[in-house]
Image (cartoon, rainbow, N blue to C red):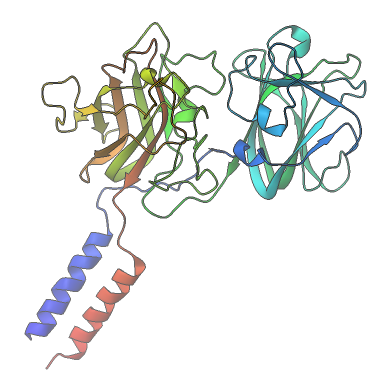
Length: 391
């Protein structure tokens, strides 16, 4: 009898633990920046693969010997290397993503010098092989206006795409398209370790002129070493690879994270800004709060800062004696939520490390892991065994 009661109680307890009462776990649908996979990609030139010429220039107009990586390196539009076509057929450049993906968004920034340089209206084509027509072309679209007329931004729904091509929107004008930055977003698998994908960040004090240096970049795995299968707590953020900058007029901005569902939160990892000679812009003292009612009211986490401002201190990303970054960096803060139920998290910056603006690289959230299927099977087995042993 004792064995039966013990097994029954244990089974009920385990099954109860498997049901998070009042918690809605949303499906992870991250909008993940996969542009970095083009770093070592094959670049083909002209309207027909292997023909034509694209001229690569730096911001001073000098030949730079640049390659595909230069327009997917998360630079600031108009200030990083750029490329323009010298072909009167509209030119065109293919990016080989090495593998096939479901592409859901493409963003391009032009070199901001004149109306002729705009990427708005340029043709984006996705295909399984580098061709401009035929059944291998999955889809094509014209870039629409993004943040300004110098950003092209289009949502697509293309399956099994390996090649992305951008071409001139005005074939009558040579050099009409000058590309400074190309971002490619896709659906990718996420690690099954409690990582919450698809988190949306918002901040009214974002410094928009920096291309992709906005709230979106805080949660889209831009520049992360595990961008093709995100969620690794030990992932590294590469120096100068995207992130978020606050408006210089406000050093104490507030960032709100919509988790896309309600979760028992385990922890929050913060990668501070990792930008050459600018790590003093990283946030320092912050107040972190959470909400379980859609952001109507917030509760602060316990104070871990003693007499300092806020309740959490985020370390500065390591630098050398000259203030330069030391390369790819792990997270600078691991914030414990202790299982608190939340659907929104708010970070109010109280101070930074002395920079002219406040900045971050990446923020990730992890839910308390659900009990595994194996645990459930063990519980069911114990319950069945207890019933069989009844007198």
